[in-house]
Length: 268
Image (cartoon, rainbow, N blue to C red; front, side):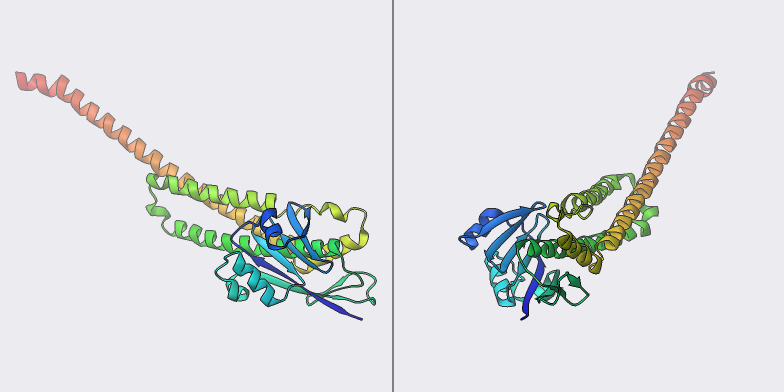
């Protein structure tokens, strides 16, 4: 006998805390995994919230998801599938699969429990979190392109905006490393080979590592771009100061020439 379970991860603009979940689901059993909350509503229904603005629904239908998003006051709730970044993955629980098997279409395994739901939710959440960062970096790349296009017109007064832009890039990298925790496997994988296999297969299918490497490359490129443009602004500022010094020297020479040569001649 097969059981079908659907996992849906959705981007949300707020961070959901423990009180929010307990208020929404009285009697909820809460645990933590990698700074995220796992809420057990029933023995086959879970909700997974992260610290980076992604929520994953396990065994919820689409109407239940929309209803919950409405109660969170998410204005795109009715059309979250097109308006918000999201990703879904079906799972089939079947005794025929003694080991976890995952392809691009479905997860297959012979058992389902809270730990399995947590691992699948974690990887899906990381995937959606990465996509959020990918879109954010694309916007920053466009902003960087605009800076290059007007690089010859950039002035010293633009340095403050450049510093703000550079700070946003540094913050982006910090949040990716500290919140998405893509570089470390969760503690619950220790001593559980099958659970680790599930994690590795799903991370491989969703290409977490290659996508993370691309994000890292884009951040490095943006960092180098800002440094280059900042150096250009500093160079222009230095050139401006050099010209001021030159003109001050010229004025000083003119005054000296007038005082020591021209004025005495005029006096005679």
